[in-house]
Image 1 (cartoon, one colour):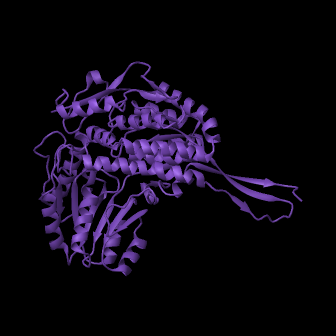
Image 2 (spheres, helix red, strand yellow):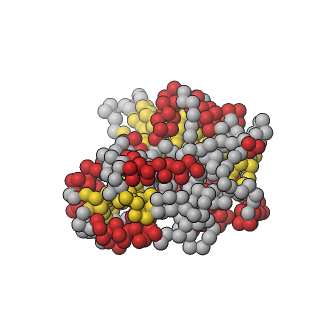
Image 3 (tube, helix red, strand yellow):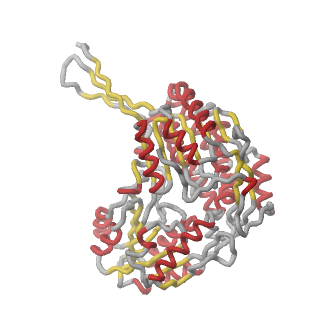
Length: 519
């Protein structure tokens, strides 16, 4: 069994000993205002949800949730561990019998109610996401709509889980295929999309008739708890959705070791995903993994420059570069290299950085100090190997964990920044000559989640899309995720797919029934 689960550098704190450098520990005006609003509508929950009841940690421990833009302490949240995880698993296990036997129409109706409540409270939820995760408010509200779309989609798909009738080879037999819910699901989710990464897993699970134990990131548990409160209000029965947060290792091990948990679904780093996969083998659980990426963004010299600039900026800098499908390498053909790099650098230099609640801000802080140090180390490695910083390249003057939007030129595929996911606002630009070279550079990685190409040639777009070893390809578009299309990767970027009709299959077992002597 693995010894440690980490979500993008997640760290558990006992709030009595919390030590964050350069951060004020009092609550600022914006934080106070948002917290007050959330409390007034019942969406600021600080306890875990087990069996439909809000529950403290058995030992009374808590940890602090901070606003990464200001250092303000938003709330102290129950720090749960093995006991609470086991209680949540037991609750989900006992709720499964009732929930799985409801009609698909009944489950659909309750999921639709949940969707309606998420949309009704999109402003409050968006503010909460900005408060604890840091992304600009417009992006955060957009995430609420995106996250809610999975609940709406799977509310509809719940009524379309179909089996098969197979023509028999013998006249007195009838052959059927049934699809049934897998059972209790353990969902381990990251901080970068604290609502959408939950709904993308919980939506299909509940639609199929599964019950779920969610373990959100300790950086962003409040959004998960608020969503769970709305799920209760929507009529989803106690025990169907449980939320426990705190000691990642103990909660993760409990989910892996329990024979009552029949599936693990995880979004996070490749290293942790491998450990989860190994741990799940002990009880032969189903596993869905959405892991790290190293997305190439390929700009050919026949591309529409304006479209390429807009798409490249969007796919690199949204959420401060903190998404698994963000462009990690920008490959530009030599015929357009100088023109594109100059225009791209000018655009990046004009990106407004600041608190996500400030009007016009398009880039917020990074999630923590470790993220800042990682970006710095990647940049220094690139410089030492001959790269040049065109824009940015250092911590922002705002302090805390703000980082300057950065462009680096003369990057080669041997540099650390081209080999590993930076997960920050750093855009390395690589020059290439031919289509074949671009494909070779793009595929020269163990990752295979998302890739982007910009070209005005239909033939080239088709050739390159087929040649790229990635689960998702955007052509002349930098933001491609949607609830109606499958999301997932090749190679070490994961297993399985989320979203779309294909996402349902991850939560279903296939049963073959043979009825004999039917003549």
